[in-house]
Length: 211
Image 1 (cartoon, rainbow, N blue to C red):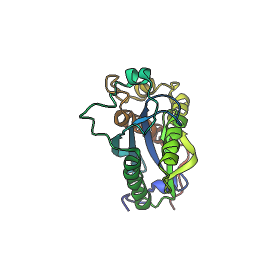
Image 2 (cartoon, rainbow, N blue to C red; image 1 turned 90 degrees about the horizontal axis):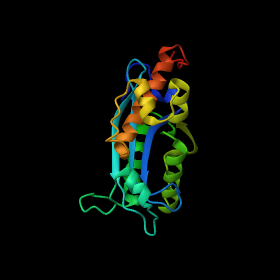
Image 3 (cartoon, rainbow, N blue to C red; image 1 turned 180 degrees about the vertical axis):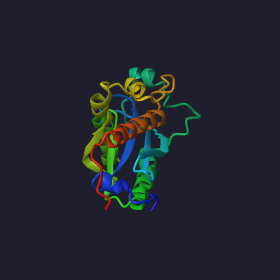
Image 4 (cartoon, helix red, strand yellow; image 1 turned 120 degrees about the horizontal axis):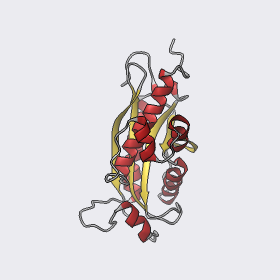
C-alpha cells in the first residue's frame, strides 16, 4: 500500500478513488463527436492526510470512424487531428491503457472503484461513457453516473466556476497559452480539487475516523 500512517484515500471518499479526467473533443455531442485527447491525473493522500497530484497519463486519440469534428472546436483547442507527428492511437487502445492504470491504482489504494472528477464533469463523463460503449469495454473502472464536479466545488469554495479564474483564486498558476490540452487541464483541475479538499480539512471539515 502506497499511503503511509493511518491516512488512506479509500477512507476519505467511501471507498472511491478520485481520478481527474479531461477530454478534448471535436464538438459537444458525446455520441457523434470525436475524442481527440484524454488525460487522467491520479491523486494520492500523503502521511498528513492531504491530497496531492501523483501523476498524469495522457493520450492523443485518433477520431473514431465516422466521427464528427467541428472546425470551431479545433480553432478553440488548437488541435490538428491529422498532424503527422501527433502520435495518436485508437480509442480502444487509449482507453484500454488508461483503464488498466486506473484499476491498478484502485487495487493499490484498497478502493472499490474510481469516481470521475472533472471541471464540468458531466461533459467529460458523457464522452468517456460514449467511448466505452463504442469500444465495447466491459471493465470500466468509473462509477456509471456519480462524479465530482470542480466547477461546482470551486463555485462554492472560491466564487468562481471558470477553471482559470478558480485556479487564480486558489493560488494555482494557470497559463492560458497551455490551456485546452487534456494533460494541462487535467493537472490544473487535479490541483484545484486537492486544494479544495485540503482546505476543507484544514478548516475543520469532515475528517475520517482513522482510529
